Length: 79
Image 1 (cartoon, rainbow, N blue to C red):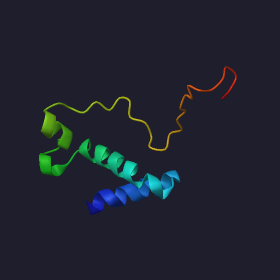
Image 2 (tube, rainbow, N blue to C red):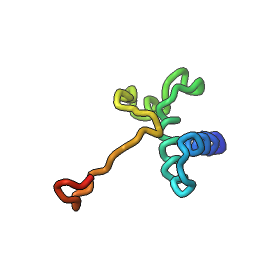
Image 3 (cartoon, one colour):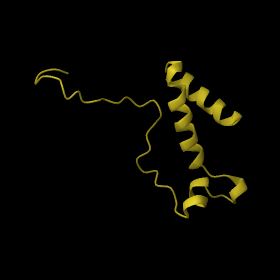
C-alpha cells in the first residue's frame, strides 16, 4: 500500500492535479500496478495471473492527457 500511495502522489504532483482527486489517482495507480510485470509471478502481471489472459494496453494514454467532455445541454454554437 505504501508503494501504491507513493506512486499516486507522484502522479498527482506531476500532473498538477488538486488533492481532492486523490481517490481516482489511487484507483489508476492500482490499475497500472496490476498490469505491470512482477518478479513474484515469474514475469507475469497480476492481471494475467488472475485472468490467465494478457492485459490489452493498446489504448493506454499518458496519465495527464487532456480530455474534453461533451455538454449535452450546450447550444449549437457553444464550446
